[in-house]
Image (cartoon, rainbow, N blue to C red; front, side, top):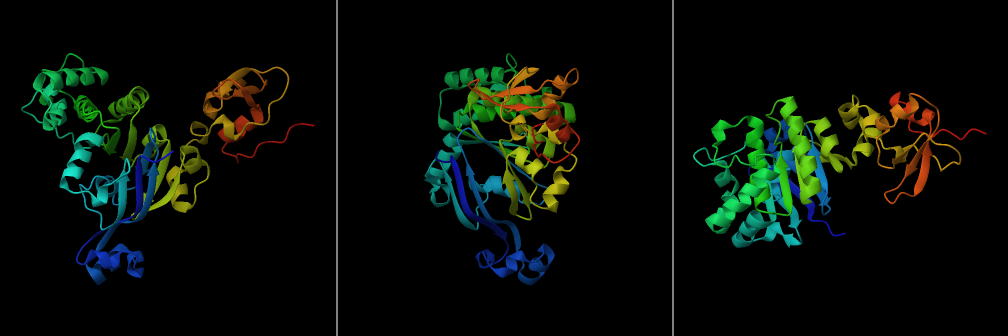
Length: 346
């Protein structure tokens, strides 16, 4: 499957004669030393990235890791110093002004941390703004905006103003504005970090729900590991402008590549991200206590062993039996032990 977004060798260097730093040994110097020697700061270095159609790809890292720079370089809101970005097969880095405007208006929508709503406009006109820029007539764009407001749970509120809404509701308007253009790709730059925890979780649920309904490709930037694990099909952990590890939530939590990633995930209950497919044995005959799909998380089968010892049957998406999980395998994950599958009893 061809990637919707493809990035190769992308760098962003701030400072004089930035291109001389690209690929140079000095690029690996500590930030303070590099800046003292050259006057340059490396925000992003040698990034390769492919995002598949319909995938939610999450980039996470601490402040200053380069993740927001990365997402802004995808549509050249920030100009990369080197490398290529392709969206839908179009070379964004070589695009002229008209091509770039078309990409931003029609192919990609962005949701920022700061909502950026127009305070003097109603909600429906805020949501319809991207369609207005395209030249869509007023009646059509307002009708489409009302539909999208309903989709994000704000139906019937189109006449309200942004200052009449809570922060969570304003962010729903920002999400609706991105959806209204019907772009295939949504870019999220820490959109929920300013919200309090309960509203933040509600908005995460909203993204999960919408993903199933509108089938968009998403790149989501966050510094919050729990958010990354909830939303991401794959996660890239970023540090000092580099990808340290890229993998599924299960891979990142279950097999961190170094101490930096290990420290990131050390407090995450493995049973919340590890699927039964990772610990199942070959199918066994006899009675079973329950049947679950292969992508079921281990924590969701623990209750089956609270009242009995019968193994749990595992099936694939078509309902075909592909394995079996026993009590010992499940409890080994809950206890934080290795994911080694126990040998069958003789």
